[in-house]
Amino acid sequence: MKILVLFLFLSATIFMFLNKAQTAAHPAFSSISRQCSDGWKITGYFTPVEADYATDETTEITVPGLTDKLVFSSKFIRAIIIEGWGKTNAGWYLGYDHETQKWQKSSAPLDNNGDALTVGMIAADKSVLQMNSKVSIPSLPSDWGKMIYTATDIGLTELGEVSVKNKHIDVYTGEGKEAERQTFVITRESPDELVEVCAVD
Image (tube, rainbow, N blue to C red; front, side, top):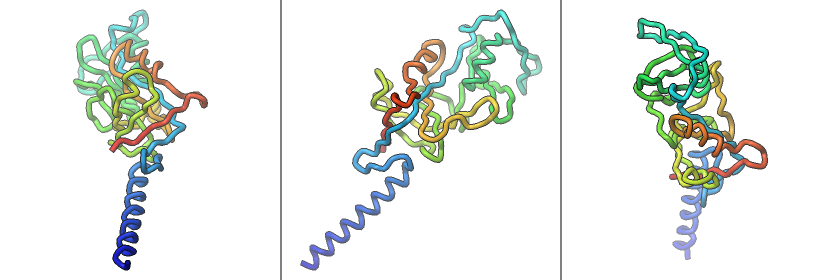
């Protein structure tokens, strides 16, 4: 009998320890069995492509490391400032560093860690969803609801301020006009549209 009581006590202790560990790993998630949390706002961001933008008005910029000033469509430049990166007609990527407010050149669009952006990466509030955490958003349409997303970015405004706060996820959807269209497809931000997000081990 004593052995049985001891076994039950140890089992309960281990269960409580695992409960605390799992909850600590994902501050926004509380359910052990499924680790899901509701009330999330979903938006999207993408990489604009220079060929998609008219050149009626142009803007001249300076990119550190390049000797010549560059001229681009003003609409393209504005889109880059909002989205972070844009693909030029030359094939390389022009980025706007929201913290330093300077332009930069790269062979790929980059996240906040300097890694190449790929579809399925997300920007999130680090105090709510730790970096490199993986989540799913089952209620999103089509393949978006089947994907596993990885938090690698934080989301900054053109003034360098954090724009992704609290229960807000910004999903990277890819390059070009179709990727831009997908940002509207997945957006869920009105109070009656907020969705459930689930942690993935």
